[in-house]
Structures are given as C-alpha cells and as structure tokens.
Length: 68
Image 1 (cartoon, rainbow, N blue to C red):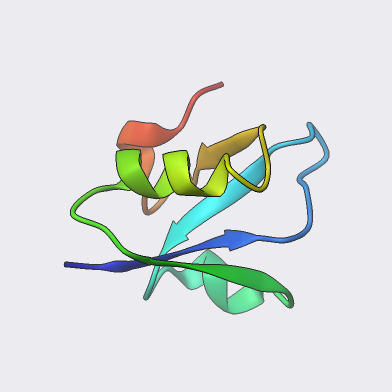
Image 2: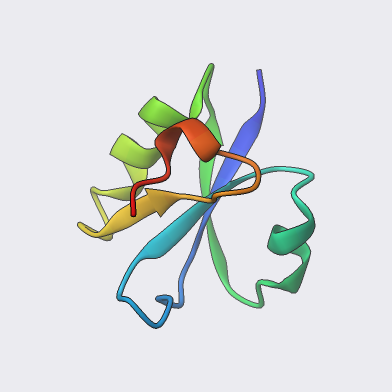
C-alpha cells in the first residue's frame, strides 16, 4: 500500500497536488503534508481535501485522480 503526500503550496491554478511516495515531482516539493498509506489515490485525495478543498491528483503518479 503506497504512502501519499499533498504539496502545501498551491499550483498556479489553485490546486494542491497529491503525490504518491516515489514520484519524481514529489522530490521537488519543499513543504508537504503526510497523508498516510492508502490503497489508491481516491482516498488520499479525500484525505487531502480535509485540509485543502481544491486538492487534485498528480497527473504523473496519480493520473486516475487528476482532473483538469
């Protein structure tokens, strides 16, 4: 079961990206919140939305949870 994190800094469109541990783009994040272990990105994004209502899956590591 993978571990997920949400970037504490919003993207230019206001989204807070949720990344799976091991994602290249997560290595560039300077401040992140640990969302814990999840079977999939859906529950990780739900958890992130408790802090950031406009959370969204990373297009690279959580593509099935990414919305445009």
